[in-house]
Length: 274
Image (cartoon, rainbow, N blue to C red; front, side, top):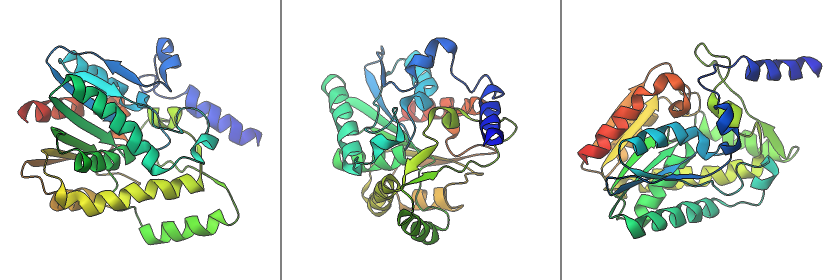
């Protein structure tokens, strides 16, 4: 027990300081944010399952510095304790992002949507429901989970004996931990995992109906999604304007990794082109 506690504490204390939040911002880890821009266009950022808006905060600041109004809501059941996810349905998350989108749309004619991990699946569903979405950026979006059928079966078996499961994290390419690992829940209700899987299946089915310009980005070392994930999303998209990009040696939610800030410019350039 003591050894496990020591290892966890060591991982946080020795983490790359660039990945960890600034001391002045520690009170913002579990908070939504909105930055007002100057160019008359807006962007909705959607964080991943079990995480918080803080994982996309650096990207939000960058886009805001380049003129955009940026909004990132906190999805229901997140940013508090894992238990709060137990009674949350996937439709609650859709309601959260729809409210945030409608709020932006009242003031801006052009609203782009960017999602990471499950946030990207939610972004696809929002784009289907709201044809007025100006464009999409899908980062680390699960099209199909690695060994999907086996994982679902195991989850069902586990749910018979346990209510919660602990997260697994792979090697992190030279740093002892990642921003997402620091700010996310380290355990989760198995019931919530089933809820999270529903948007994955729905977004997979409706990709051919998506017509907005779309940029798809994925790490070639992603431990969550299948290897052909990016190509499957790209091929399935109904968008006439679509681009794809692979990130090398990066974690699943690479957007919060300080080494992958170069992706920010790729996203900005894509949005400005469309």
